[in-house]
Structures are given as C-alpha cells and as structure tokens.
Image (cartoon, rainbow over all chains, first blue to last red; front, side, top):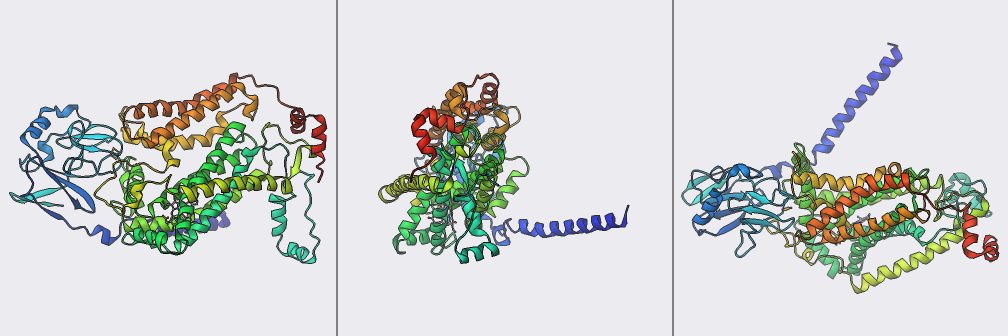
Length: 171
Length: 430
Ligand code: HEM
Ligand code: FES
C-alpha cells in the first residue's frame, strides 16, 4: 500500500468514527428522558368496583382498565378454545392468583394505540362483549383478547400483584 | 440551462450592472422566471398549480412564523396559547384560520399539480428527476402537516399523533423502540410536542430548498406541455414573462378568491370539532380521522383486516400505505409508452379517469367510520390502486396504439385556432 493511500484511508476512517460518535448523542437525545422514564407504579383500590363494572385509570401516562367480570363473562371467556385465537391465551393466563374476576389490562388498542371503549358506563363493548376500539373497529372479548379487526394482539396485561383482597399494585 | 434563443439579461441601469457583476441574482431570477426563460406557448391552466403551490408555501411560512410568536410549545399551555391566538391576539384568528386552511389549499393545489403530471406524462424522460423531487416535497409536506396538526394539542392532535406514530410500532422488532424514540416517551407528551414544533418550524424551509432543486431540474429540459411534444424551435415558445407571469397571475387571483371565501365564510369546514377539546390521553374521540388530505392513504391503511401468511394485518396496512406513495417513485419506469400526453392515448385516458374515481372512493372511505361497507370498498379500491400502476399501466404502454401526434407545438396550436389567428398569436401584438 502506498503511504498516501494509507494516510487517506486512516484519515477518512478516523473522521468516520468521529462522525458516528457525534451522531449517537444527536439521535439518542430523542429517546425518553430520565424524568419520563422515572415511572411510578400505580395502586388501585378494587373495593368499589361491582361485578360487571370497570374503571379507567392511568399507568405510565397511559390508560389502564380494571374490570370486575361477572360469572357469565368468565364463562364466556372460558368457553372459547384459546388455540383458535389470533393471540392464543386463556383467561387464567391473563389474570393473577386465580382471581379470574379481576381483568387488568392496558387501555391501549394493540392496533395503533387508541383507547378502546367498554370500560365506561354504557359504552359500546363490541360484538364480543369486552372492549371495542372505535378507531379501526377492533373487537376484544371478555378476557380482552382480540377477536375481530386489525389489532394483532390481546390488550396487554401489565405486571401486577394483589396487595390485599381489594387492592392491586401495578408495575 | 435554457434554449439558445432565450432572451439575454442585459441590465441598462448602471446600478443593476454593478449588482450583476458582484452578485448576479437578478440575472438568475430573469433566467428562471423572467423573460429569459422560454416556455411552450400552449400551456393550459393545469400548468398554474406549481406556482400556486409555491404561493401556498409562502402563505404557510408567513402565517406560521407569526403564529409561532404567540405559541407555547408545552403540553400544559399549548392548547390555551392557540385559543389566545384565536381570541386575544390582534388578527390572531386570521393568522390561524389562514394557516389551517392554507394547509388544505396547499394540498389541493399540490394534488392537482400531481394529477396534471400523471395525465400529461410529465414524469417521463427527460423529467424523471423533476418528478422524483416533487415526490420528496410531497412526503415532506405530509410530515410537516402531520406535525403541525399536533401543535394545537386538541383531541385530534393527540390521537392523530398516537395513531400515526403507532404505525411505526407495527414494524417487527425495531418498531416499538422507534415509536418511543419518535415520541420521546411511551405516549405523546410534552417531549413529543416540543420536537414536533421544532421540526414543523424547520421542514417548510427544507421544502423551500427542495423546491429550488425541483425547479432547477425542470429548467434543464424546460416545461412539458399539453401535447407532450418537445419544443423544436423559437416558434414553439414564448418568454415566461410577461406571458406566463400574466397567466399565473390570473390563476393566483382565482386561487385567492377561493381561499378567501373559505377563510372568511367557512373556516372550520375542513376541521374537526373534537380538536377544540384539549388533549385527553384517557379518552379517544369516537371517530378519529386524519385531515382530509390524508384520507386516501388512511383508507389503504385500514383496508387490511386479516393476517396474510405470517404478516399481521397491522403491518400489512402500514406497508401498503407507504408503498402506495413509494410506488410513484417508480412510475417513470412503469409507464414505458413514449407518448407523454394522455390526449393522444385513448386507452390510458379511460384508465386515468378510473384512477381518479378510485382515489376519490379511497378518500371517501378514509373519512368514513371503520365499518362495512366502507372496509370492503376500501379493500377493492386499494387493490385497484396498486393494480393500476403495477399491471394496467405497463400493459397499456405495451399494447395501446396512440393517436397520431402533432408534428410540433406550433402545428397543434394552429390546428386548433386556425392558421390566420395562429400567425397573429405567433407575433404577439401589444
Ligand atoms: C409546509 C408548510 C406548512 C404546512 C403544510 C403547515 C401545516 C400546519 C397545520 C395543518 C397546522 C394545524 C392547524 C390547526 O388545526 O390549527 C399547523 C399549525 C401550526 N403551524 Fe404550520 N404549516 C406549515 C408551515 C409552518 C411554518 C413555516 C411555521 C413557522 C414556525 C408554522 C407554525 C405553526 C404553528 C405555531 C402552529 C400551531 C398553531 C395552530 O395550530 O394553529 N407552520 N401547521
Ligand atoms: S387503534 Fe384500535 S383498531 Fe386501530
């Protein structure tokens, strides 16, 4: 190799590494900042939620649905053969500690992120009696599993645990 | 670059001569949009829309920079500063309505400009680069308008931001990190609003830069014309100024009348009432739709409702939506017919009209709720959209027998207006 070529390649290579070192922070600054990442966990009191009712609260700046299923809704969810579903999961797997009546999910449609209807009083719960996303028509069943429409996944179940019989800690 | 018979810039005033020596900017203008730029003599009113798009950009920049003086890019105050602009700032309502409706009019003229290109084959050699740069401008405009719509921080702003950034979430593996990166959080928030404001301020100036490249690329072969026959000599052209400055001036008058009518009599007609409700992350408006200019693409996005092999419906919709625009970048090579103008292509002309109807149907479905029959209609219309460019156009180019072309631009003008008149027109009187 000629001396000149070597110097050329070395200089360009060095400048390239330098350029990458500059670009990394330029891009990374757009990622969530520390204050956004410093997310608290959320505690939810279940005592006032009657069977058939649901509440909407927030977890990590996004809506969280907590729903008290009726026996009929549980039976409906259990009746379905999970393996036939788009995102196969049983109600059992989507609830915690054998308390199948407490369905806790993110209120974020897995299609493009709208808040599905069905947690509020009198809202459209869709064809499968769970949640209905008005944006592009995704229907979720009583276990908040995707049954119809463009959403690819069931409503996400966040990590949570029971702190007492009537309270949960999400996150 | 220009035709050899272009008029030459020869400043008479000593001051202008002095300027010309030091910085030949007046010369550049003279050669670009003055008497120094010869243009086919037969351009019709469809050739007005490029200039109108430029005017629309200027309107957006002027009203936008003014609104930025009164706007607070923070999620706590954004909504109320826009309301202050509307109620308290002197003439603030005018600036905001002009900006919001200006965006719509910008898209109207750009869509007409694009369909002009599609019908008259302006994308064909030697103007491929002009077409490609135009598409780049179109993409930048869409990004700008999307981010601008987020700024008032109303319900539609918020949910629009959520749904559109959610599109990126559909990409396997890297999708979610990209979405969080774009938003600077897990949902639209202050970080998103700030960066959208910064970019919304920047992008129009980037667009202005690309427009300069677009016009530069155009001025190398010069404008096409309704016959699609290239310029052959001085008799085929007239100087841009005063001929087309006058014609564009007339078009501008019509444009401004339409714009003012909208602005003063129906300023909220194209908007959504939900955007006068402040952003609420806990409640999605019953009917989320983007602004009308995104409807055809939105319909394509929503047309995919079932998975196909391993590809989830959501990803398919996103891919199809992006593909529907990216496809246009390949158009110069999909339509191989050497005849440019649709006037001389009988089969092409029919399918062009079908395409117009198809896009109108897509637009209608994109604005309609996500229910039957709209979903099924969108599916058919989306399929046809792709078929038009990927199957119909290449086939027509191969089998169609074009009508005989006029020998030259002048010949076609004379055939239309009669020999005597034509001769008079060729030697303009005034
Ligand atoms: C390509 C040109 C541009 C387009 C297509 C465009 C589009 C838009 C749109 C659609 C909105 C939302 C209007 C509404 O619903 O209220 C908006 C808002 C806004 N734009 Fe632009 N814009 C452009 C250029 C600019 C420029 C150059 C600035 C200067 C900084 C600017 C500043 C603003 C501000 C401050 C708002 C928020 C106020 C409001 O929402 O009315 N825009 N823009
Ligand atoms: S966001 Fe729920 S169906 Fe599209």
